[in-house]
Length: 462
Image (cartoon, rainbow, N blue to C red):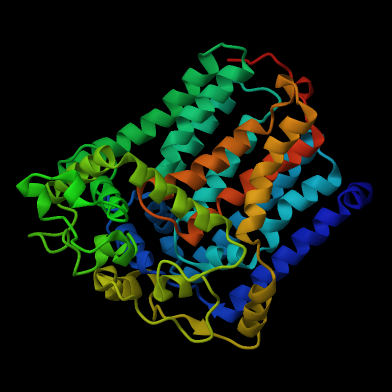
């Protein structure tokens, strides 16, 4: 045991610091920090049924912890999941023969980034989603992939998809990876696809039974409409009369961020009769978005690229607005209720039935002040994320890695998809970048050390 600890001493130091920082956060911000989406998640957990806007995976997670009646426990479990991701990154890198220094560095952002720790303390789905995705990535890099492993990967991806729908494209990516690993044999991929499809289809049946609609959410059209309003020009699109009501006469440069077209009372979509997410409104919004993309493909591409570029800034400009941006900083005073008043629906019930006490955040000094000071200096700049993502590509170009040294491909592709999907179908958000980092760091660790597929038996047992 002493010899093992000595061999992994630098990682144990980093892990220990990560534990201490999370303990200080728990002491400084009690019981957790609320986000506008938190209220909907909790209400859905208390009356478990599919939500129109977001899948219920995180609400199921909250429901499992509900008997303990404490959001402090929820935050503690999320911090443990954050630590788990760092451990998975390190152990997977070492198992595939990455140098110790590369494995330790790959784990540092997950364990020590102040914004990652703050995200874990928020009552939102991203920490759970990130842990599910990284568990699937590390499992897919196992030495052998039998039917049990393939089933586990599929179930993890299904759980990730039912936590955040952005996980759905990863099912296809992982199927392709398993086929590659098996030299074209599709049985492992088939088992994984079946294991992923069954929970997703089951949720879809439940969603249809409660809403009468097909899918796992009922807001795809609404969010894509909001996305296209960053560039849509109705003079170019020439929409029919029923779609023209969704036009905004202001030039794109003078329009608010995309999210305002979903939540603001001034949004053309929100002004329509009924709630924003009715089937009729969602279908109408989807038709408008489809016409906008077809009419202005370059405008759509430019919008995606400009939003994606926000992930790679050296600083951290305020976006999409001061209110949302403020939720990602350790606060000096308890956060005010969200400006989106629909988000508060059911808050009293959350207070009475889940926490059995007030749902405000109590800020306790000096611990909270320590975390605010730490956050001012300990964060991963967006420019560093870009460097990490480019490292495997640079290694391929310079060192001409062989096909059997492609262990970086799966985590790198996972990171890229998770980074690109939000600005492609909705908008950029700082919290969407953080789950990307562990996979990108693992890919970089593999790229600098050239782990070979020869380290893993080629036979794939089913």
